[in-house]
Image 1: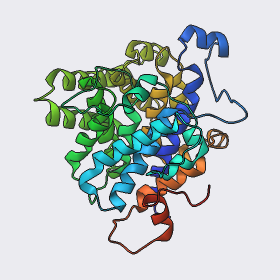
Image 2: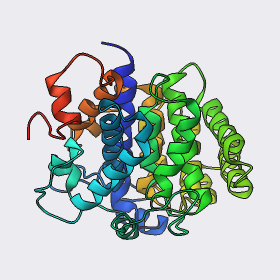
Image 3: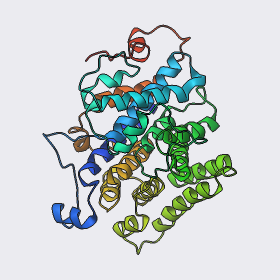
Amino acid sequence: MDSRFSFYRGCLLGLAVGDALGCPVDSKNWEEISRDYGPGGLLGYDLQHDYAEVTSYTQLAVFAANGLLAAMTRGRTEQYARYLVSALREWARSQQYRGNTEKTLCWVAQIPQLRRRACMDTRMLDTLNRQTLGTPEHPANSFTAPSAVTAAAAVGLFFAPERMEPSQVGTLGAEAVAVTHGDPETFLTGAVIAYALAGILQEPEHTLAQQFTQAAEAVQGQFGARYPQAAAAVAAQIRKAIGLVKHLEISPREAMTLLECTTASECLAGAVYACLIHPGNFDEAVTVVVNHSGRSSAVGALTGAFLGAKLGEEALPEFYLESLEPVETLRTLADDLVRGRQASRIFDDSWDQKYIQGMPLTL
C-alpha cells in the first residue's frame, strides 16, 4: 500500500480521537476535571453507550473534505469555495432534521454517526442557515471561537500540487473559517492550520516546528498587508507555544494554562505545544492537550490531526480506534483524498456514486 494512506488516515482518525477524547471535558475547568477523573485528569475515553462520540469538529472536517472532492470530481476546481460552503450548509441541515429527503452533495450526510446532533457552537448553526454567509472581505460577525477550525484542516488534507496552487491553501483555509467566524485572527488561524497540514503531508522531511513556523510565515506574507495585527497575533501565539516547549521547568499543565486555549488562535497554540512536547507519542500528546480549562475538543482535534498526519495511523493506539464509531468511514474518506481523481479520468462507478450522486456504497 502507498505509504501516504497511513498518514492521511492518521490525520482524520487522529482528529476524531482528539475530538472524542476532549468532548466530555470541553465545558469543564481543570478543577472540575480533576474532581471528576482524579489528579491525573482524563486519561482515556469517557465512553457513552460503549462508544466514543465525535462532535462537530470531526463532522465539519469530514463534510468539508467531501465537498472539496465533489468539486474536483465534477471538474469545478475554480469553485472549491462554493462547494465547501455547500457542504457546510449540508452539515448544518443534518444537525436539524432527523431525516433527509433532499438530494445530497455529501455522501457522508447519510452516515448516522456523522449527522448526529453534536454541534459545539449553536451560533455557527444559526450563521450557516442565513442567506448570506461571511467571507474574509465581508465578515458575518466577530466570533473568535475555534468551532470552525477543522473545516480549514480539511483544506490542508485536500491539497495536492495538481489540485490547486499553494497560495490557494491559505485563501481557502481562511474562507472555510470566515464563513461562520468573522474575526480576522480567527480566520487567519484557519489559514495557518491549512498550510501546516498541507506541509506535514506533502513535505514529511520537515520537522513539526518547521511546519508550524513556515505556515505562520506564509500567512503573514499572504495576508499581513491587509490584516497586519491579526497575522502578527497568530504568529505570536505560535512563537509563544514553541517558546514554552523550551522551558522544561514549566509543566505541560501549566503551559496549557498559560496558553488559555479558548479562542481559535489559542487553541492552535495549544495544539502546537502538545505536538512539540510529545512529538513521537500520540497518546501522551492528546492526553496533555485535553486536560485544561480551555476548549478541549478543539485542541484535541487539532493535536490529533497534526500528529496523526506526521506519525501515521500506526502511531494511534488501537484502544482509541476500537471504540471510535466512524472509523471505517474516516478511513474510506482518507483513502479517497489520496486516490482523488480528476473528472476526466476513467469512469469509476463507486467514485461516481459517492462524489457525483452523493450516496455511500452501503447505507
